[in-house]
Image (cartoon, rainbow, N blue to C red):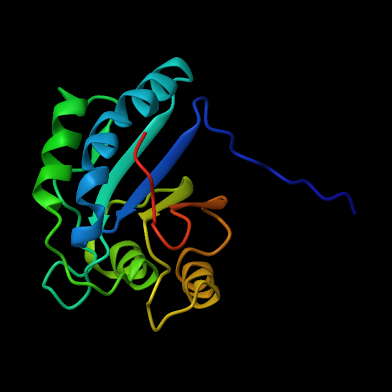
Length: 173
């Protein structure tokens, strides 16, 4: 018997992007670059007609933030998206704990703390730090948790890291 397969294709690309920021004191010099880089992302998203959710969290776990989004979800219809991003970066601050736990913070953000952030979309996670991740959770554990919770119906997961070289960490622009 013939088999019929049906696929739904979105008329515009959709993506959920989670930016995970190291907010320890050693990252304070990088804040100006983080504040301005949103312009490039928004220009790209606009030119490609990307339907996006952009969320920002810190790497602090055990501080009460524990993966909670800082500021609102930014999308293509957010008024003054650049200003909203800058305010979220300022709200994160750079007085966080010395233990960078990006993997655990992103697991909490994506699977426990922020219902409604994830949609049936591709997921991008961007880690920004000047240190290696110190989560008890490995990246493989995070990938397994996302696979279990999201399944394959939601599209791909792309992970990027902007992590500075040792011994001095990220260097400014």
